[in-house]
Image (cartoon, rainbow, N blue to C red; front, side, top):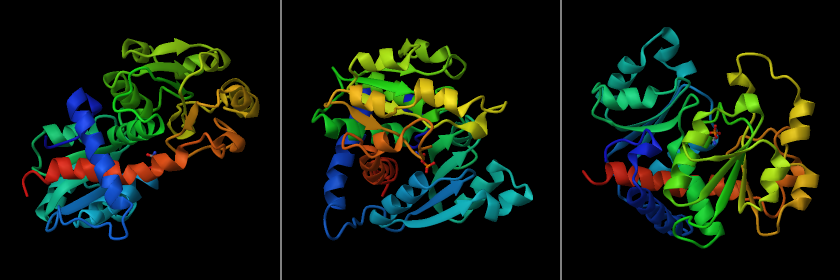
Length: 307
Ligand code: CP
């Protein structure tokens, strides 16, 4: 395996192997000395055409803990701002020694194009492309769910994904991975933000959040409202919050055993109340922490084999 641009590239065993390795690496991350020599001499470049806190920083920490050299590039301060193409940028980074290019891009399919066009030999890792996919987010979410429910695969668990599904690369990668690992995937959101394709991908749709929550899901995964990707102005925050926010009333109705997740960044007060985000059932910061181990596992899987 050379690239990771989509969850579709992983079969169930390959996904479980990454998650098992991430669990092992989490033990390294709990030690005082967190460093492994695995990627000594290799260079990982984080090439980000969109803003990021969690993904960029955790890839940087992950590569550093595996002893790789890490370079961070954002489009605003690179020659991308002078009009350099993705192809020329990637080839330049490879000429500078990049063994892996971690790319976040506003265009759906950008990472796959880099991986498949043969422009570079470097491994390409998709750190989020438009509304298409965010495979390492889905992997860290699966790692978190495995920890929360002390299970290997996710058979017998139900996960409801709520909100702005149409713009969500996190939702698409999660639906694919959760299905692969045996979970039941439910979705709920406003009609204009739930694409038909998601039911075809194996998710069961609810038109009402309270009905979805009444099914007593094991995990409630709230999604960020992505106003920046909406063609027209977002209609009404108040209306959205009334119908789709995980607010205190819904929080109180949620079973004690349910867990709350959100990929971040959160719009507190819009899709999730502060009370829900900070509830003891919230695993949101655990998701962030697990991002480091999962990204170490992905870098290890793609780059360590040819060490
Ligand atoms: N979840 C996620 O991708 O967060 P960032 O945009 O901060 O990387």
